[in-house]
Image (tube, rainbow, N blue to C red; front, side, top):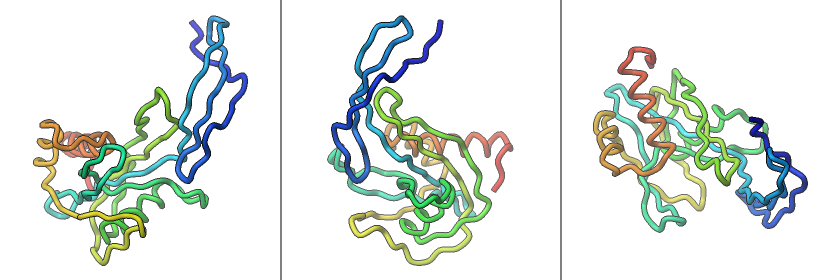
Length: 184
């Protein structure tokens, strides 16, 4: 069976700083028509940054949609300046943690919620090369902390780390290192 849905027309309902919301009329594979609401997002990037003891750098920051402080790896949205996802990740690591990395490895792409958003998050890991001063965005308030990889995995399994990009990137890094496929 053909699964592709054909976009017939699209209307922008909201166009903001980070997202654009559209209402699309589509033709389904069986010829019927329906509507799709889409949150269009330019994408993001995240980095599992490990020190020499395999401790991972995390940030805690308030996430307004959940009204709680969330534990995450350094991450941010892709800039529209033509830079690559990796270049954006390097920037975010420096801004949020004050770190530069080495031996960056691409871990894949994550579709955080394919039912309604176009966002793609690019996952990376690296080894910390040096630490300096962080310089978060003016509207970004966060606390940096290090957590041993094994403990971070346990926190994920216990439901203490809820962020999907963090769960995916940390678990992939952990498994690939355990299998000997990934060395930093």
